[in-house]
Image (cartoon, rainbow, N blue to C red; front, side, top):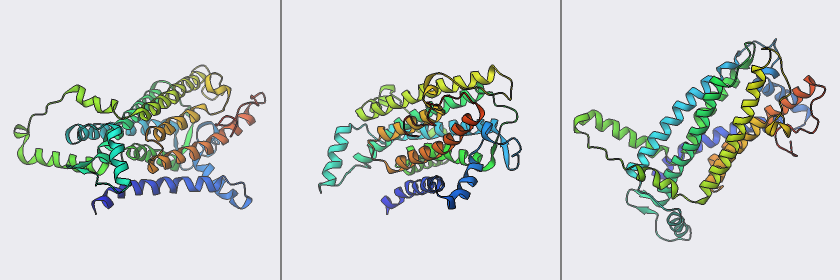
Amino acid sequence: MELEMHMVLPQLLRLAWIAGTLPILIASIPIPKLKFLHTILLGFARRGKIMHSSSQKFTLPQRFFLHFYIVASIWTTFLLVTTWCYAYTMVPPVRESSAYSTITSYLIGGSALGTGSTTMLQRHAVWQAVFLLLLMEAQVLRRLFETIYVFKYSPSARMHVLGYLTGMFFYLAAPLSLCADCALDVFYFLVNLVTKFIVIGKDHMPPVEVELWQVVNPLFRLGWRHWIGATVFFWGWIHQQRCHKILGSLRNSRQAEEYAIPHGDWFEIVSSPHYLSEMVIYGSFVVATGWSNLTIWLLLVFVLANLSFAAVETHRWYHKKFEDYPSSRFAVIPYIL
């Protein structure tokens, strides 16, 4: 029963990512009978320069993107702090090799995983969640900074209200997906802590002793694949920062309603390199988890489908807008799409 309860949240998140991905995949099939679905989804996905200026119904200013990153920063910080506190307080450090030896023993019919109040697999999952949330924190805080200081949205730039709601859902569900396997334990830990504080009062709470090295040491002991994932993450993170800086400079150097062909960095190979780098960033989470976390896999598939759908439309817009647009550029994935 306890195992079933722990699986409820991951299963709900998986269903949500599947429900969000399937319509995009179906609408992308080049069949005339599905063209209406493609048109409907395109209407929801359009924003900024690729949204017709006359399409004002059910739209919001594109500057409301700021809401995504305010919410994402607060939510991710909350998940990171509570998960880290739970990991430090309740979950002893664990070496990856120990976790895998225990897991292997279990899979081949050996003894149960349980050791004390947590299993080796659970311990590993908790510290892994902290690691992933740290990366996500770096992403959403940078996006918040860019939205405030780098991007200058045109006063007429709009987005569909359903696109706004989808973005809000994404930045709530994506960080949660990174820690879904231990989120229920963290929730119970937090509830018990708050209850204890209310019942016995602040003055009777046991003193908290924090050893800085013990707070961060388990992260360094997770394993090599996590650091490969982090390397991939920052590769995409740096390129996205550069591409956003290029886009922001174009807006700063021109009139509010003028557009120009962006150049530099990954713009030389694709029309939407900021989307490509976003794909790399979320792909890094799959790498860091050893390609084994289904929830994060489905999150990545949603990101790939959603951004590819939007990038293809942006690519078409560039070709219609500029006669001299480089023909060698792909939409979003070099040599593929």
